[in-house]
Image (cartoon, rainbow, N blue to C red):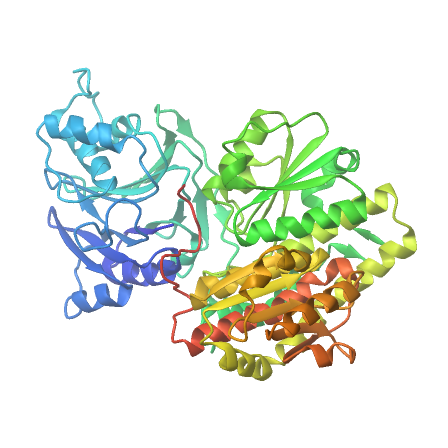
Length: 621
C-alpha cells in the first residue's frame, strides 16, 4: 500500500526522493517523509497529507546528502499524523526505517523492547522494526546473549531483527554510522533495486526509479539487498548468498506521465483501445483460428482436461473473475466458480485432482490473492496468474500465467486493467473451447469480434459529452442502483464499485432479476437506476425489469446496443454501445460506466486519482 523510495549515489538525494515519492503517491497519501544522512546524523522531515506538503516544508534548502530514504503512507497502525509518518528512527537515533506491510507480532516485541529500555514515540508497528534493529546494533549481541560475529554489524543487526518478526514488509534501512550502505528487505511486499551508474535506488515499484535507470533486480521473499560504494549483493535472512539477474524495466517514463490529461484515471480510460490492442497483439491468430498464449502453452493439455476452474481475486479483479466464470462455462464447458481471495485463504477449500486455480491481480502483489495462491499451491493445484506487473510476486509464484501488457495503471480506480483481464480470460476460454467442442466457425466469429473491440471502445469514448451531461443531472443523488443480467451482471457490480470508489456515492450492483426480491423497495424518483440492457439472450427480461422501475417512478440510465429503437421509450437517459457477441459485451458496456463515475467525481469536486481511504495496491491484509 505505502510507497518506498531510497537513494545512494553521487547526486543530492533530496530531489530524487521527492520525485520518486510523487510517482508513488497513488500507493498512499495520508502522510510522507524523508530521512537524509548528512555528516553522521539524520535530517528528518515529515508531514501530513500530500507530497506537496512535504515539498513545501523542504523548500529553500536542498541537502547535499547523497543517501536517504523516503515514504508516502497509507495508514494501517496509528493515525495519519506527523508523528506516525515514516521514516522512523530507533531509540538511539542511529537507525532509520521506512516500511510497507504489517508486523503481526509487534505488540509482543514492543513490550519486550520497552522492558529493555527502548523508547517509542509513535503508534506504529514500524517503530518496532527500527528499535529492534537499533537494539541489536547497540548491544552487539542477540536475545540469547550470543555476540555479533565479526563483519558489518549493521547488516547483522538487520538480519537478526528480521528473524524475530512475523508479518509482511518491504523495507529500506539506513544507519548513521554507515554512510556508504543502503539496505533493503522484502517479505510479502514488493521491493526492487534499481542499478544505475555508481548509484542505487530502492523502491516499491519501477515508477519511482525509471527516470534514473532501466536496470533492476526484483527481491524475493526472505531476501535482503545491501548496496553501497562497492556495489551490491543479495542474501537470505540466514546469510546465504543469492545471485540475482539484472532485468530491464518494462515501463517507460512517458507511460507514467499525464501527457495532457487532467487525471491518470481519465488517461487510462482513454488508453483502453490502445492498451487492449497491445494485450491482444500476437495472441489472436485469425489466419489459423486460434489463440496463442506463450505463458501457458506448456500447460494447455492439462487446462483442456481440467475438471474445475476456481478464479480468485479482490475488488475489480473479482468482477473480472466472475465474467471469467461465465466465459469458461459457456465457451469451454468447464465448471467454474469464483472465490474472494480474502475468504479463500481462510477456508479449507476442496481442491481435488483436475482443479485449476486462476489468480487475478493488476499489481501481482495483492496480499489476499498472494496468500490464496500459496494455499492453492500447497494443496497441489495447478495455479495460473493473470497480472499486469512484470516480475511481481504472483507472477513468480504461480506455475504459469499471462501478462496483461497494458502498461502501468496509476489511477487508484482500475479501468484498463479490468478490460484487459476480461480479454485474457476470453482468450483462455476461447482456446480451451476450441480444443474441447467449439466449431471452427464459432471460434472464428469470436476471434473476429475480439479483435474489433478496441475500435468499438474508441466509438464509446466519443460520447464523453453526453455521459458528463448524464452525470451532471444525477451527481447529487446519494444512492444509485446498477442492474445487469448474464455477462453484464458483473459489469453492474463494477459500475457500482467505480461510483463508490471515486464519487463517494452509495451504489449497489445486482443481477436485474434480484431487484424485485427486496431492493425494489428502495426505488424512488431520487434514486438513479443504471441498466445494462444490450441485445442479449435475456434482452426481453431486462426490458421488463426496466418497466418495473419506471412503474414506481424510478429514473433510468440505460446502456443499450447502437440502433436499438425499442429500448428508447424505457430510458430517461440512453448511452449506446456498438454491437458485439454476448460473451465479449462486458469490455464495451463497462466503459460508459467508468466514464460516468469519473464525470460524477469531478463534478462533485473529488480527486479521482487519490480517493479517500484508498490506495492502488493492497499489499497488506
